[in-house]
Image (cartoon, rainbow, N blue to C red):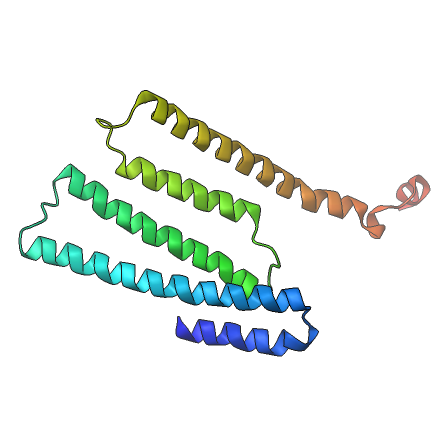
Length: 175
């Protein structure tokens, strides 16, 4: 993990002279956020691990208790969301993408909604809240689907617009 961050710093250093001021700013901020999220993931994973192990060993945690099960898996999902967000930031640091892709943000939002569904206590939530959560999930899913459809069609459109694909009718018939 630290090798990866050092590698990212090397990439930034090599490209530093050709970057604009804003690209430098963006890369440094993305690297800082990557370090910060990495630290948060490490601490959260350590606390999750020690909490689960000590709870199981000392009998304070019943693995069959539904509420405890929800809490543990909610915490696991939180760590997974942070890992995915960190992975996304690494593309910005290494300049593989200059902008965080909207589809990735939507997928992270869907992960967050999945986490919410996992920790949801059906006895305490109102019908309006359930409808709201369903509407948000549906809206994010539709937007993701539309973006995916657009991206799936993009390579086909680009292939049709290439010069080698713009032959005349006469050229096509003689070939």
